[in-house]
View 1: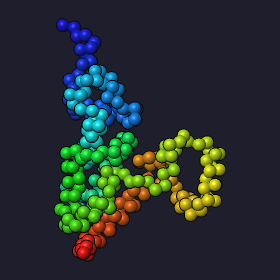
View 2: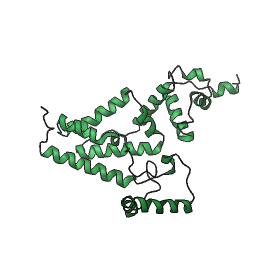
View 3: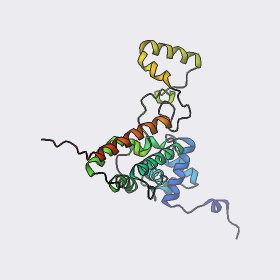
View 4: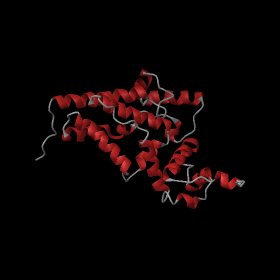
Length: 237
């Protein structure tokens, strides 16, 4: 029997296939353009077919975050707690580099899905298994904050995208930089002290890979020092 074109294209859906297609589509067209209808077109199904697997757009985004978490490498067996944490954080950062939209979605999630909770649990476990107290681990997690997901809030993010603007012509940009230097000389000194990485792993600006690892290593060295000192948080009266 000869199959009809519609039958050839028809693919049995499951939740994983829907989420992987959504991730790929967001990579291609951006998260703002992603919709249930556009995703259905990509999968050659009617939109109602998607609702058997995800209840709505919010649940779809939750699932996409879970798909990104699945790309983060597990803790390295046999590594010291500090090396294990460092490698895990950098793996998360590389996952975000593959999906530039992911940071916004991760930050927008209010409910923690099972995969997200499992990731956080395993992250905490690396500290505890390394001998750090629950008290110090608690504060270490707060200090790392978004860094455990591979990103930080950039201090000097002067990209046009961050400002919600289109890129300025070089001449206009030079004038603006000169005016900034006159008004805010200390910022100008810092901005001129090192080269910016135009191909930063998560967006443009100063928060390139070096800056990210520099701060990460400072934090990890600090946690290690406090651990060796037997540090405990102050007892409140």
